[in-house]
Length: 608
Image 1 (tube, rainbow, N blue to C red):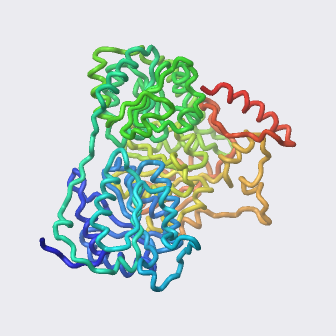
Image 2: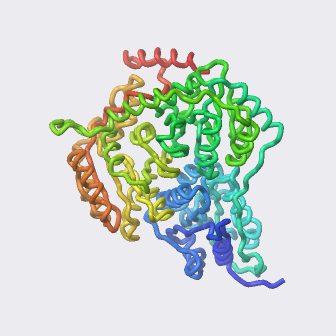
Image 3: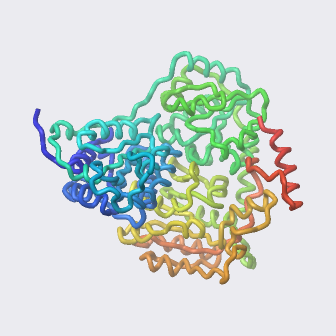
């Protein structure tokens, strides 16, 4: 057996560079790195040596560069991914939030944080977290609950098993998620004689599991017995590349479709059988169909509480729950009749088994009424309207400026709910929402990742002032890389979404809007000046009309273009929506809380 002598870090990077997807492209498209004493000498040197075969990108914050990597994988439907490396200590723990985001959303990313010395000679090293009762613990153990696979590399030869396991997880449709290889810093620099064939090119193909025959027969029987079925399309439709299969299935069998946040754009918004977004942030058309459905058929969804209205949305007491999912954990949720399979394969086999069976379709008036209501709130204000614009009007302006190749993206705050309700997504993956973890700060870094994944797409980032303040450092990275994307900052001067939730549960406005917090001086944050200082082109839009003009001007930018607009923190879309279980205090001195508690208890009784 021929061998080659390399350090553990050199071997890891060389192996990573040789792993390809079924299109023949490197599965790991690049490595985001912030170097420190725990990774600069080992992984840093190895990345430099392989710089011709694998790109290294420098971020400004470990969490945000991980968000960029995750958004890259999400936009490409998990066909490719990125790696992220940091030093030991705060650099590593900064990435734990991003790992949780990837875990919740079932997205591949390879984390390689530096770790303590395996030999323990210099213990405790700088930034080392010491456990008084367990000498094997380090800060990187924080990654364990938010990684689909975790390994600590304490000897070079452990990579011979750890790296294949890592790629198996990241490329497996059922187990897909973040992988953490905590890399002891002395081990990174240690040499080993590696088998040359360990670095041979390997193709990781997308597995498409077929369903169990008994499960398939049971699901076919259940669908045939239904009179008012509805399909809930989730993010798994996109990850499986199943949009066309879903379209063929529903057209043949006349079953209406509703879309989750992750599943939105699975069907074009104007498809006759697409009844729109579902759940807490859903359309009245979609929620009405779900309330009456006697069969709820989830395709690639994990049935999150926003989708199900905390399980109060599906009100038909006779309803059955089906779940087509590649992951058995999701397939069996809430007593569902499972069909564990790839979405494309499952839909095709179901369609064959159903033959010419058709449902009654959907009432076209429901959809027409919904879009009439949506159009009213997204329409531009009259010329003499001096009120602050609403978020819905901002969405309308962005929609009117959007083109066929536009991707709109967001993550947290007011905008996800309004975008889910109101955005008209015309093609798959034209709507990119991180709402599994609803992580403030994902937006700007995520926009960068989307644009890196699909450079020819027009990327529009929708971000509130709260999320912008949480994490904006990769705006400078985008400027330095010359990445063109449009960022619309809606400034409602605080956390408007949570302020409304606080009020809805009977609470007083407190500590959410900046004017209601315990500050000595009023907020004077100049987002235009800040964005410009980071290297972006930036302007302030004083009206919806000025916003539309700025969105057109943004197309000529050579880097990130930021438009800031002041908005009203209080209005939301009145139509649509569903109940969401947010526990209201049983005891309070406030009459408003007592009233909210009575409504809450009444709503609990309606849950099935």
